[in-house]
Length: 481
Image (cartoon, rainbow, N blue to C red):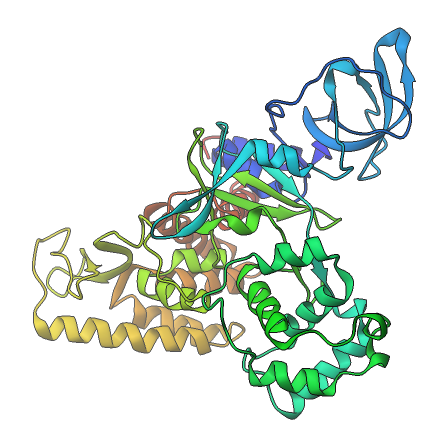
């Protein structure tokens, strides 16, 4: 909520002409809410509030709605004094017409989220989430508290036991996280919440208990958690379903290692490589879903299951990574015939770019219109495979090795995700001692991002902000930057 956070970036804006949505994204992980324009359908009538009521109220600092508890009613001024759920102590006096009921005492009650969004079943995708109201880019779609938060510290003896089992013979999932979360759900959630977890998508609804689940159940004892004494061991099939539900639908915890959280409503969002929404977490594990682009009522709410850097890689790589969720993405980006993340340097003119086609060939050169020979195709694709492996193994601290790799790669690639990765490494390597070289590599990163994926991302936001800072530092006399 600290409005002062925008001052520094406003300075950058004057110098580097950063679009306003980028300024919002740079700081959206520092602010709990920003441009929420109203809670559709919520009655702001001047009802009789009393101390202790849970409400939604408008915080005057930014005009956004937050959860709060009424502390005092001031009838003479038609206002109430509230205590904000996040313990902020400013703007606590709120006019009655800016207060609405929050019957469940949460950030957003389930009834309100159900009014703002709808779950619909699509033939090729299953259940998906849609918005019932329009939103501008940056608006809050909804805020949701988790159904389950699983952290090792919540049941340390159980975590240590599973870790020992995994060390003796690694689990097929490669980690303890989801088996621990499934057991914690069984031990700590009420039946209604467990049903929420079980209701989530899994590729194999009738999956038999895995060898790991059987092994875990055979080694549990009451000393590992107090609730084992009253609940006993879970049914193997039910535990397996909990493991799979959490594997495919939970989010990694934003602060704790090996932690996960599951959210009922947002877990209905399908993946897209061009997602309509992004999310962030508040300190109390509340998930805040924001519109990445302008949305009209009835449009689908999608998120990316991939890391943001993966959205800047080729269709083939994105598709490979998404196999972790056992589906093939058919979003608009994946359906494009031309992959703009795979630009190769023309062997004829040495200037132009040949972009890869998803059919396994290349476009004609954008400069000289030359078509690649079969030999050139084989050379390009073999080099691409070799460099993809090479950049994954590079030592980011070995500047000399990075420079050699970059120089060689420039003879093969132009606008290619491999060049973007190398530009990222070199920008970081040069930042302290070769700032003007760092500026050039940062500029190339921005150019690639905007050419290949011209959507607002935190990566692009930080690139612009850091580029603005660097330009201001190196060329303070320029007024046209």
